[in-house]
Length: 282
Image (cartoon, rainbow, N blue to C red; front, side, top):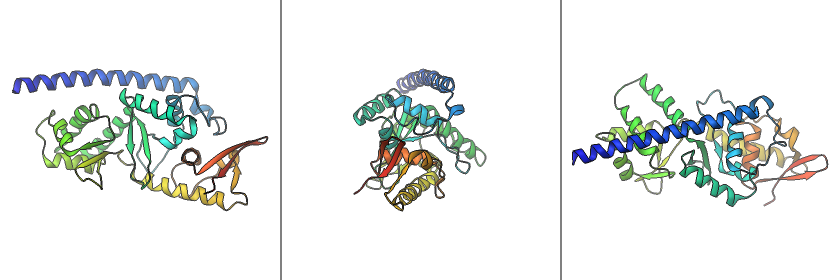
């Protein structure tokens, strides 16, 4: 029995190693394409880069344009709503996201915002985010940190859905070693899992250090809608609007505009003088 289990662990480790190599190659290709297109140097306006025909291209562009947040140690992520604003065919977005998730190019996370929000992060960025958490924890203790390697190899690489049950989590982690309750607690305290309110035996996968950004996301939405609602026709030209700064959010105006357009709270109207952003009436 021990020999069979050992063989199974070896096979899983080998397969995981192959997958990681494929993902690294994919990530290098993505970075090369982003650099080739010189997105960071050009920084096109939102009016110039509002819509795309391909979900992966949209994700790459939004990753490159993700705002630098000084107070939050978090790597770039996008929202599903932003993709809905960027790729007009929502069915296409959902279909391509599912394909990219299964190919282990990205992960999808249910956000704790009180709304039906989902974040999308490239898998290599997510793994790097985990490494950041582990390094900070290593400064305080070395005890029980092996669980994070188990988590990456036997959970993240195998369980692709946004949620996982306690029994599944325990089973997958056991491929790495003897699992204790404190191992599970470490993963939760690191911000990698959150318990579901409806069923405490289920967890959502989570992005570490995203808490302060989520607070800003909710406040920024309110501030932007309030800004437009105070205007006479509840609208504003996109170009000057994009240049405004939000006081209540670390995320930039471009991030919030994509989000609120995709979620249906705002709409864009083409005019002879440019694109107008308008509040959608209830």
